[in-house]
Length: 89
Image (tube, rainbow, N blue to C red; front, side, top):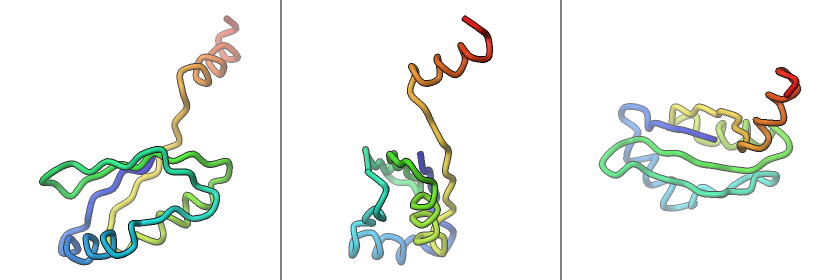
């Protein structure tokens, strides 16, 4: 999960870059969905990937305009499997 905030002074160039390119995903990333908070400088992008390198690539493509955070997330069943290994249930 990517979360981003447009850095101060970069709203116009970030918006223009997004409108021009559509912010395509690098090879190896599959976009599940992208959301923008109306009236703010924040947004979220959910992707699927088997390799962290394209995550880094996409973040780097926007690093001059956005403060990007990438957080690995798992679905409930994957979390339950991991927790079962730890807690033996």
